Image (tube, rainbow, N blue to C red):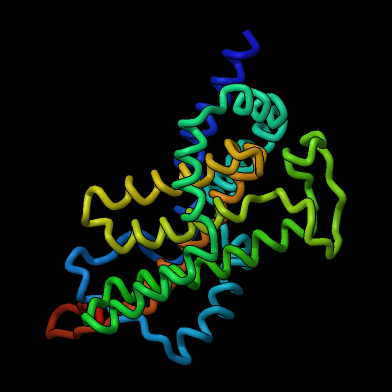
Amino acid sequence: MITKRITMVFCLFIVLSIGSVAASARTSETETGGDAAGTLNSGGKQKPVRLDADYLTGFITDTRDILTSPLRWGKSGWIKASIAAGITLGLYSYDQEIQDWVQDHRNGASDEIANYAEPFGNGMFILPSLGGVYLYSRLYKDERAGRVALLGLKSVIISGLITNTIKFAGHRHRPDSGDGHDVWDGPGVSASDLSFPSGHATSAFSLASVIASEYEDKAYVPPLSYGIAALTALSRVNDNKHWASDVFMGSVIGYATGKTIYALQRSRNTNLAVIPVIERNRTLVLVTLRWH
C-alpha cells in the first residue's frame, strides 16, 4: 500500500512539474500584455537581440520586473502561485518516502539516463554551449539562434541568482548527507548544504523555456526541450543529490523566469499606436500594432 502511494505521488510530481509551472508562467504573460511564448512563426520579424548596452542593462531591469511582479498579480496570479506552493509543500511532506523509493529502485539504466541528462543543468556545460550558439548566430546571421543564446544566458543567470539566494537563506541538507528531509540550517554563507531549490532544475527549465518559446512553431521543439529539462531535474533525485521538492521548485523558478524574460523582450519589440480619425459625421479610433 505504501509503495503504491509513493509511486502515485512521484508520478504526480512528474506530471505537475510541467503543468503547474506552465500555469505559473501565464501570470508573467499577462503582465507583459501578450503570450510569453508567442514568438512570430516566421522567426525573422522580431527585432534581433544584440550584445549591447541595452542587453546588459536588461539584466537589472528584468530582474527588477521579475522580483516585483507579485505586486502586479491579480487574483488568478495568486491562485497559480498558491498552487505551485501547495504542490511544493505536498512534495515536501513526502520527500523522505519518495527519496527512499527512488533509491530502492535505482538501477544501471536510471543511472545511465541521469549521466546523459545531468549536463543540461550544469553551468559548465550550458555557458560554453550558449557561447557557441551565439558565435554561430553571428557567423550565419541566424537571429533566432542569437535570441536563444542571449535570452537563454540572461534567463539562466537571473534564475540562478534567485535560486542561490533561496539556497543560502535555507541551507537545506541534501539527501546524500544522511540527514532527514527536514534538516535546515537557516541563513548563512557556508557553501555546503544548499539543497533547496535545485540549481540544475532551475538552469535546465530556464533555458528550455526560452528555446521552446523561440521555436514554438516547430512542433517537436517544446516537448523535446521540456522533456530534456524534466530528465535533468529527475536525474538529481536519482543521483540522491536533491529531494523531490527541491527539483520541483527549481523547475518552477527556471520555467517562470525563462518565460518572463522572453515575454519582456517580446514586449520591447512591439509598438502600439492609437490614432484618432475624425470624419465628417463620425469619429474612429485606429489601433495599429507594428512589429520590428
